[in-house]
Amino acid sequence: MNQNNEIKPQQINIELGEKEAEGIYSNLAIITHSPAEFIIDFTRVVPGVPKAKVHARIITTPQHAKMLLRALQENIEKFETRFGEIKIEGQNPPQFGFSNTPRKEKVN
Image 1 (spheres, rainbow, N blue to C red):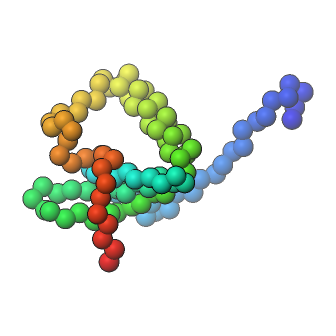
Image 2 (spheres, rainbow, N blue to C red; image 1 turned 90 degrees about the vertical axis):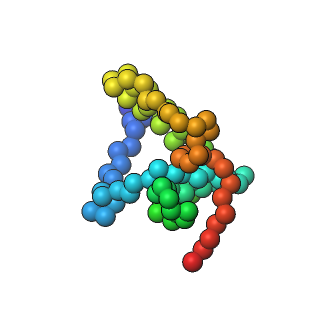
């Protein structure tokens, strides 16, 4: 600690691989949880196709899920301040999209 008893935040170098830098497109996230973890499955739904494949699964702690929620909210607020309100049109609730509805898992 320095004279003012301030703790300096630790810097973390984050490496982004070529494959990960490409990213994946998702228009459907299914969120489930247990007492110990949150599971977010990212997939994409194509109109007319009754089947979707999970392209990424994130498993995290409840604390980190809440921190993610806060970070997303802050970034959405910054985005809307700069570019205007993000409108969500269509059904209420939407037929598909990001939701917290239970799902049937199929493991190949």
